[in-house]
Length: 161
Image 1 (cartoon, rainbow, N blue to C red):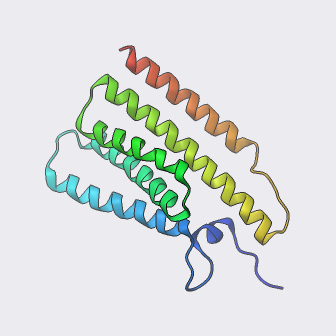
Image 2 (image 1 turned 120 degrees about the horizontal axis):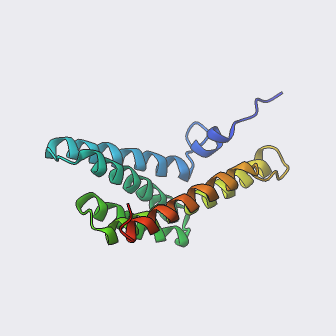
């Protein structure tokens, strides 16, 4: 009986010489974060924690853009704006920039959910030969995170936080 592959193996590419687009996007995200963290460490910035947080989100958005380019999914190129907002957040604490950063983070979360939901559907069809939807808790938790981020963005733009 052949061993069944897991969803993580499916995403990263399970054949020895064939890698999935997700693997290259994931590796690109970590490479961006590694190089950015090295530059941040060498810069001697004082507010390194907020810059690092913006860098993490920027790396995530860069991975989404790379995945969109590799799979020719043009709607994922929307994350270029989210990437620009995260880079702007690294250099500015203006409330408008923070609001754009929150909006970019929401766009990145929705994009990542659409990618994972589509890949999970492909995985279920190819490996298990039966379509099984994502567990109901996944969209519920993502929706709650998006609502909290919207509330945070609104409170920040109003000057309450």
